[in-house]
Length: 204
Image (cartoon, rainbow, N blue to C red):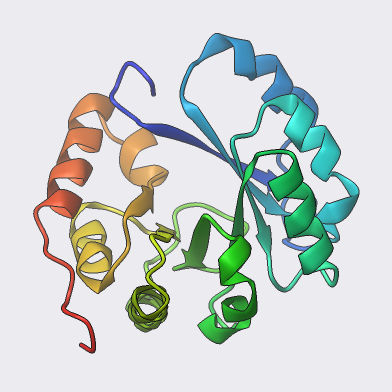
């Protein structure tokens, strides 16, 4: 992926509890950390992630994103990541209002808007989730905050352009890159699609 032109490596950690799938944990992340210089964007789809933050920090994560639905001690968890000089993110599932992250924005580098139900790749993009991106970008502008807004799920050249217009600026692509015959071309196409769109003006 680094050779193909990716800027970050998005690492989905799933526990079979918060989402109905299991992937890998901090030991795998630690094992691949010395092999690549890309930013490690670790997405924790796990219950009570505060219990494992120290391990993911030590494994080499740069960004650590938790789900607002999964952690009742968010203030404590976010403060811990700040103290470790890690960039903290929060994510919302499709049925969660984006306003759920607003109380924590001052501690966040990024918000991840899931555009599919988390847990499995290859799902259909949910265009109705773009309203969350618009509302979030408006709130960030109101606060004069340079917030990263990430979208994940069903991202291809078409949906990346739509998300960019809504205000997203970080795009997670799985199937559209790993399923492509030429990953380099797929990544270049995604970048071109996302960068060629002007975000909507404030209030739109």
